[in-house]
Length: 149
Image 1 (tube, rainbow, N blue to C red):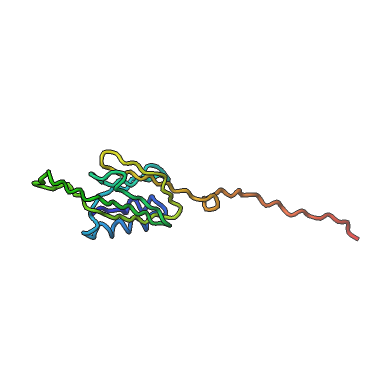
Image 2: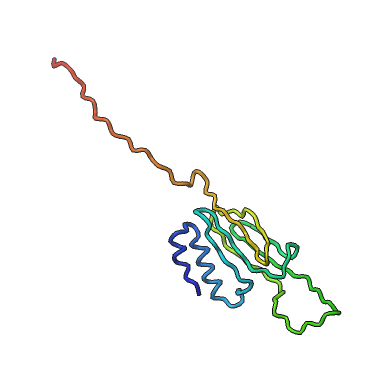
């Protein structure tokens, strides 16, 4: 099992994602297909899923709310002229869900060499970004000069 706690310290808003990844890693049925989550910059992330044997037509990516769902459905191609002696390459269908942090958007996806790369960017609205507050100096109260009556 992988310890995600170093990522929790440096990824504000992704703590829920890493907790879910920890839970998913402990469940045997969710072990396929394997995937990586990489941090490319302060607000840029990439999910890489090993989908050898799947083409773009076999894969579906859907972002709904804070849930990213990747589905792979392989058409059953039974070729009567070929006898498979050993089938070690998995061709089974899958559905993998990722819980995204707030303000995370899917920017795109690429499939190359059996790896599906999904680009994510965290776009925080201006109102939610930290801003510097100028510190002013309080002026001394002015004394009113008056003549004694």
